[in-house]
Length: 529
Image (cartoon, rainbow, N blue to C red; front, side, top):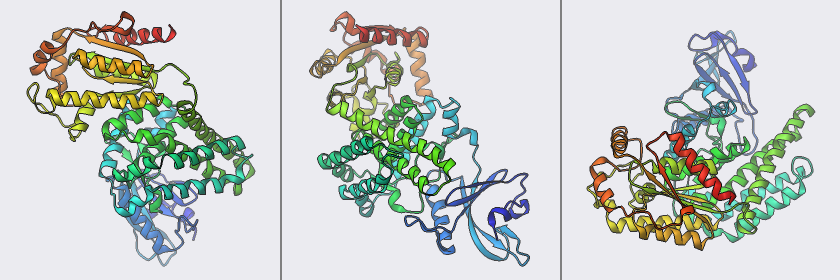
């Protein structure tokens, strides 16, 4: 019996439906009814994936539901038998002989898939931020063990990358050029030889986890809450990885679709929510790896598909390999060659409620620069969640003079590491003390970065409104509030320590767009001059 035909019958389903759509992949039959999705695994064996027996298909259906409930508990509903009665009629969850198993899922709104929103130019910065937060929370809770740790060892990584190059050698001159192949292989070999300490550190820090494994735009639905689905269930080793490799897949996918701005925002937000700055040391390597794997898998179609579809496969694979090569080029520009543009070190400065975080975030996003937040760094040092509020009296708790000094010292260390890697930086903090401003200014000079202080001021009535709204909504990680505003104001040291061209004074009491335009114009003018 051909299930692709038999299950196009509306009577085969447990609930009424007006329509049935069938989508086939190389491993599944996917039937879409009005409200549900029924996914049946094909009896195939590709070595890395084995669905060859009914019992194995049942097992992997159950694994699919179990694993995906981690991120979408209300989407993955059950594993149901597909039965055939004496009249040879196939039914899902019916009576008779069990001939297959189906994963039953709640149908998601296709128009809200991340890929659809991106292609329709409707994917917003706020949506990306929500996705980053969801992934960071998932990674924080994801399982880890000594067995999983093995998949982060340098020998395992080498095995995976060398397998990629062995499997793609025959496509040189077809979907990948020789110069691309040589450059990517050389980069990978060099990285694995000279940076073994990075991989060891990730294992030691507990960053090798049971991840998603296939984290890209088609597997994320922007609903409330965010739905992330279709993780890899058929082979554990494809899920067991560095969390950096997991998030790098999605960042790479955004790059592939020419949205480097959103890719940068995703990584900045992920670091902010996860507190994992070590991911920045690894993301470019894993972007290369992920893009290369996508190019490889697409190239496999050249061995089996029709000539008409082969042409499309070549174009797609070439784009992935070109993207991988572009990351290698960027890495070489950072470490071995001249920088393509002037480095910038920008700080915000001002009292709470003046809009420092808003301006810093926009400046970083629009320029593709790294963002460092004092609120995030402070709570990372205190080992508390970024979203946990510490409403303590002025100068107490994590806001003592000593703890504040530790926070600024740590921010400077992070900024220096990024600057020396060729990455411009925006530091979001109050910089209320001259000594704090002097230290960051000295760093700019030491790294030959263009320094700009954006001082933000605002009428106090407006600040009072903003701080009240902030506390009521609980949406930010800042602990600033009106009760301690007078104390901060009394301790704030006047900003008169920079040359005129290094100091931008912005009144954020006016329209937000005006403030942003003023800042961006001033920064652009500095770049030109």
